[in-house]
Image 1 (cartoon, rainbow, N blue to C red):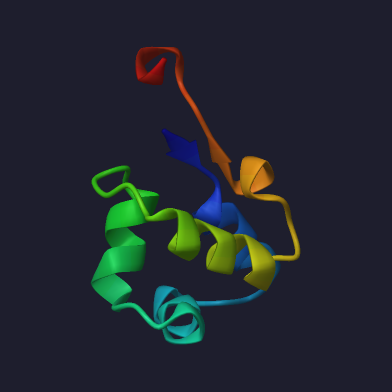
Image 2 (tube, rainbow, N blue to C red; image 1 turned 135 degrees about the vertical axis):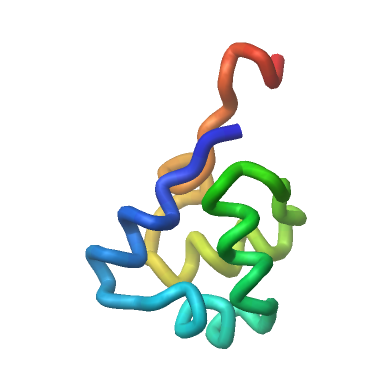
Length: 67
């Protein structure tokens, strides 16, 4: 699964730590999600999308290998 969290953070002028605090996870979790090393839960995905005022599908996209 791909994501554009890093781009959205830049647009909203948020650091990994800022975003982590807003969604109540560690900065390391945000880092791992951005690098594709961790797949967030549905609830966490929804929280992140809400912070950026986007649909989940606008933040996270499936790759062909995920199907």
